[in-house]
Amino acid sequence: MAKGLALVTGASGGLGLEFARLLAAGDWDLALVARSQDKLEALAAVLRAEFGVKADVVVMDLGVVDAADNLFARVPACDVLVNNAGFATNAPFASIPEDRVTEELLLDVVTLTKLTRKYLPGMIERKSGRVLNVASTAAFLPGPFMAAYYAAKAYVLSFSEAVWEELRGTGVTVTCLCPGATETGFQSRANIDTAPIFNALPVANAKDVAEAGYRAMMRGKRLEIPGFLSKAMIASLRMAPRGLALSLSRKLAEQ
Ligand SMILES: NC(=O)c1ccc[n+]([C@@H]2O[C@H](COP(=O)([O-])OP(=O)(O)OC[C@H]3O[C@@H](n4cnc5c(N)ncnc54)[C@H](OP(=O)(O)O)[C@@H]3O)[C@@H](O)[C@H]2O)c1
Image (cartoon, rainbow, N blue to C red; front, side):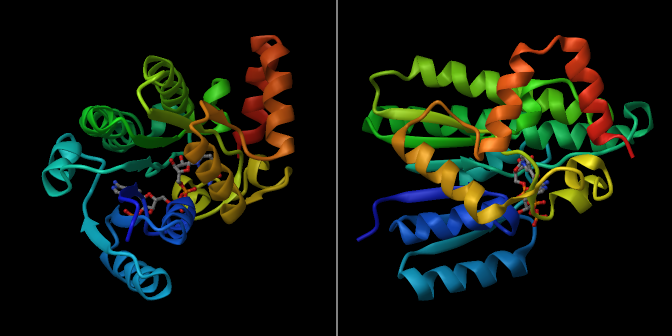
């Protein structure tokens, strides 16, 4: 008997696929959401066979205005919501096509916010629920050459922490996961493969990062920064002058 339904956005690869595996191993039925139908179907088949859970596939573009409405119409309730889908663009801001900026903000900010808004009332009514919002270490500083992405992740961190506080005593929690550079499909989508952030520093393993996020979410933690290096980097950034953080951030992302 499953514990309930977990909805994972961006489940077709990277961190989302690892979250889905962890949830299935923890006896949660799954709704797997992304655009790549074949990858989702293949994952669903593996999860059903390996863990005996139900796994439904929802093929949907979440980077459009009415994405959250469409998804909520297909999946009207869940017990665990993992807002993981997201992407970045590494380029001078003024050169990025406007449509791409819009899609990035719709996916990374608007859909995440609307899905949280839609699923929380049911969780609060049932006095039980978990939300995991995937931000980034990028949430802690401005990001030249990924300006909209860093700003979007700062929003996700601020939004998630505020709602976590609001939810005290309800039985429902919102956890914000802030990974550093992690080996997934993210780099090539963002066109950031050759930047120092993915070359000069150690890159984390997706399974380890997802495990840290999963554990933090299940414990109802407010914030999780996986890995010693990322924790140390964020602690020093919090004390560093903003101008210094900005120039370091530029050095890490400029190609
Ligand atoms: N990897 C890192 O270094 C890193 C660091 C910090 C934070 N993060 C965050 O971690 C989260 C997961 O990213 P990842 O690293 O696992 O990258 P990834 O391997 O590129 O996975 C991204 C997932 O999001 C889905 N997705 C992208 N655009 C979508 C859209 N318009 N509609 C629906 N689904 C969409 C993709 O599936 P389809 O293409 O099939 O739709 C894929 O399943 C993101 O929020 C990212 O910002 C990543």
